[in-house]
Image (cartoon, rainbow, N blue to C red; front, top):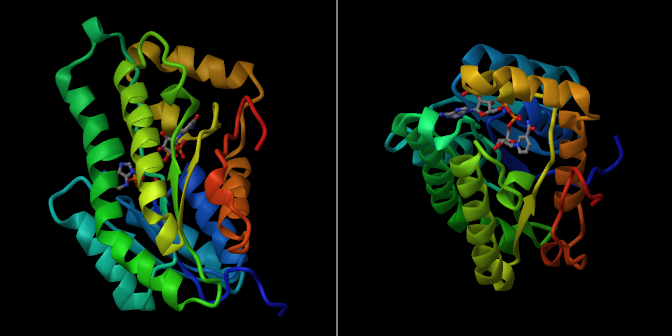
Length: 255
Ligand code: NDP
C-alpha cells in the first residue's frame, strides 16, 4: 500500500458513534490513522470500528459518557494504553437543544454546557501534553487539535442562545489555545459547519424538532462526510502549511 499521510498516527474522535464523528473516524482511518472512537453507545461504536477494520484500518471502541467525572481522563488514557501515543484529537461530541429561554429548563442548558463545554475542556486538558509529545516525536513534526464548532457560534438565532454560547465560547477558547500551542507545533483548528444532515436534530426538544427537520430538509444540508473532508484536509497538511493560521468554515462559506 502507498504511504498515507497519517500512517503511524493515532487519532481520538469524540462523538464517533454517529454523524460527523463517525464520518471523521472512517476518513482519518482511511488516511492511515489508528482511531479511538469515543461515545456512549457501544453497539454503534463497534459498528464503526468494524467498518474501519473491513477497510484494513485499526480502531478501538471506547464507550464512555465524557460528562461523567473522570471519564475524559479515562478515554485519553485508554487511547494511550491501546495505541501508545496521541497525534490528533477531534473534539466533536456535542448536543443542540433549541428552545426559547421561556420554554426551556435550566437542566437543558446545563446538559449542553456539560458536554459542549465542560467535557470538551476536560478531554482537551488530558490530551494536550500527549499531543505536544507526539508533535516532538512524530515524523510529521506536528500534532492536531480540531474542534467542531458551528456557524451558530457567530450567528445566534432565537432559541439557540445557550447552544450559541457553547460554540462561541469554544471559538474563543480554541483561538487562545492556538496561540499558546503554536510554538509546540500543535495546530489548533476550528471547523464551523452550517446545517449537516445528522441525528443532531433528533435531540432538539419537541417544540422545535419539526422546524429544525424542515430546515434541514428544505436546504441543501451538508453531509457528515463533507465535514470529515474539511477535518481531513486540516490534519493531513504538512507542517510547513500554516493551517493553524486559517479559519475553516464548512457551510455557508467554502474552506
Ligand atoms: P450526532 O448527534 O450525530 O452526534 C453527536 C455525537 O456525540 C454522537 O456520537 C453521540 O454519541 C455523542 N455524544 C453525545 N453525548 C455524549 C456524551 N455525554 N459522551 C460522549 N459522547 C456523547 O450529531 P452531529 O454529528 O451533527 O454533531 C457532532 C458535532 O457537530 C456537535 O458538536 C455539533 O454541535 C456539531 N455541529 C453539527 C451541525 C449539524 O447541523 N448537524 C452543524 C454544526 C455543528 P452517543 O449518543 O453514542 O453518546
